[in-house]
Length: 297
Image 1 (tube, rainbow, N blue to C red):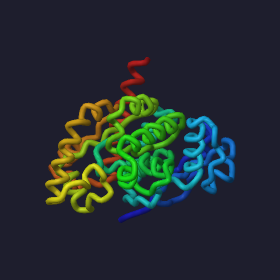
Image 2: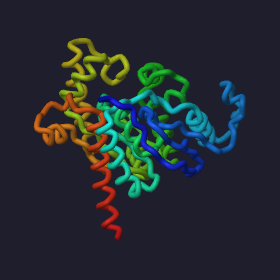
Image 3: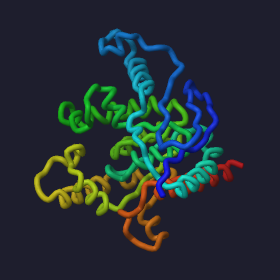
Image 4: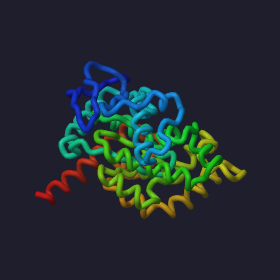
């Protein structure tokens, strides 16, 4: 039986963020951030430029705060069963003392489920969820990553991605789904390592089938060549993974979908539910954090 279950949490104020108190049963929806910092000039909200001559770093931070004051991107409902909710709640309570308010950054290849799993993790941890790609789109005023690539360049996108990650790294209690290529810049790791990084490791065959099924129009690094969608996606994903695999391995915790499937007695990662993957992520997070705590003590 499906149930929409919310996880109870006491309201807290941390680093200028005010969390809404949870209560009762509701669907997995990450609470939006609300800042108590200075109000932004109305003209900025209206899209004009009152910041001429102001330090660019201050402008970026202000715009990021403005976007965070709105409803968190991608907060549509995520449903899971009552049994899954209880397990997620238990594991989240095990992890929270070790996290101590630090942000969680999900890394992995495009299509690996960072957004879907991230929303579940944000809900059960009482965190807010953000997608770094969406924040870049808001920052530059362009509605899609593919269009940013087309109108500007990948380098332009990566520069703005780094700025977003830098600003997020000064915050607390966030789950952030990063873009697949965020790991290629060492500077991004310096930001993400202020929190906890989790790699969602999905077999390339499964990724290629998933992407081919929905199309490559929103994937600018794939939407370049004609031919069979699966073959094209698999070939490009293989090339990208070879370039990035060492960077992904820098993550604090690795969630292998192949390993989860084997634990369940099969080898089909496509039947794994997002909540199952989220439970494994919490387990890996707890293992890493508890081992680090033991070393420090």
